[in-house]
Amino acid sequence: MPIEGILVESNSKPILWAQRLSPLKRFVSQIYLSLPNPNFNSYVQFEEAAIAALKRALGALNTHLASNTFLVGHSVTLADIVMTCNFKILGEVKQTASVPPVSSAKKPALPKEHAKPKHKDEPKKEVKEPAKPKEAPVGEEEEAPKPKPKNPLDLLPPSKMILDEWKRLYSNTKTNFREVAIKGFWDMYDPEGYSLWFCDYKYNAENTVSFVTLIKVDGFLQRMDLAHKYAFGKMLVIGSEAPFKVKGLWLFRGQEIPQFIIDECYDMEHYEWKKVDISDEAQKGRVIQMIEDQEPFEGEALLDAKCFK
Image (tube, rainbow, N blue to C red):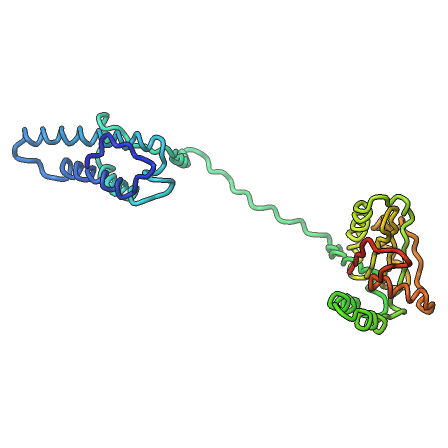
């Protein structure tokens, strides 16, 4: 099947192109690789006919490649391989003005520039030796990087209460919470190594919109993340209608609220803080109610209960 006049449709198959490109090899091999026919006139006529057919074939191929990178689709197929093999022979034939060059729509990479040869009379550049590092004066040594200062809470005497164990117990207890989790808390609690604190929001009158109040509490807990290693907390949003009350219970490492939390978390100043006296049964009972999210709490419904652990 001759290649001239081909218009490739979108559903053409690579094998169709491979069949259409096969005449290229036949034309070139017959013209340039065969020995001349003794009948010179017949040979010249055949050569002219073959070159004319080859020009038409290359022209059609060049038109297609002017707007396409590959013969079929957007990647290499059998058609491109057959074309490359056929043009291996054409590559050895001197290009003439009568045979149009075949080019692809994809621009070839620019050739790399070769370094210009140096003139014989050009003086050689002196190679400078790398500068030697200055030696430090005798007696002066480089200062070693100072270790990061430890958190003061890490310097406290060891405590029998392991905070992570309590957090796991709290998270994993799904039933009989008071008998398992609450009892486990008091068994673990170390009043010498930890302290309990109540907090009450100072501006409850401003809590007129429920979701805004919840977002406010969520932001406080997010900013308390710096105390994750040293604290456990419960925050209750109380009330079935505005204004909503915000109250909390916190367990801190040490006997006081850690100073770095007060310095870094500005929400701390928005609350009234009171240290829990566990010898007072009423305060101890309030601690239990807040840990287990008891409802009603102090005679009011719970809008939400959040935990910091």
